[in-house]
Amino acid sequence: MAAAAAGAEPGPVVGAAAAAAAGEEEPGPGAPCAAPLRLARLPLARVKALVKADPDVTLASQEAVFVLARAAELFVETIAKDAYVYAQQGKRKTLQRKDLDNAIEAIDEFAFLEGTLD
Image (cartoon, rainbow, N blue to C red; front, side):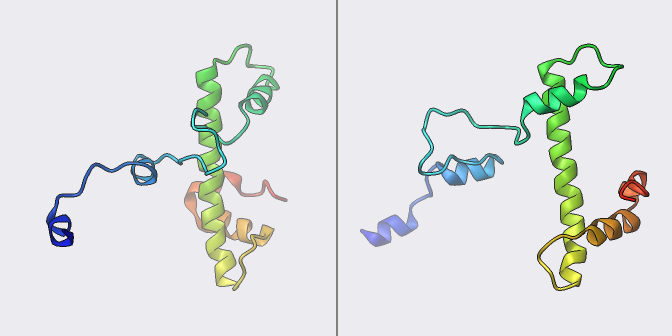
């Protein structure tokens, strides 16, 4: 029987493997099954408040707020990963301000941030 199962074609990808393949996270064991998948990690109400703090902005759609939140998440993830490389070079696991400074100076994408941490 084991020989027959070993030669069988694999079935469809389900569960955590399917979620990982789709780029989604599956809820943990304590999470209710019917809970919707949270696409943004930043609180959208806070992002909307930041958008409304700009006097030039009068209205912001939920879609615009979501896109801004997601863009901010991706930006923070990118700069943190790049700064972590400098922390590892210093044989540390904790990011320090000097790691962010080094990433900002070394990577052209972050040139617009030069001088902002001073």
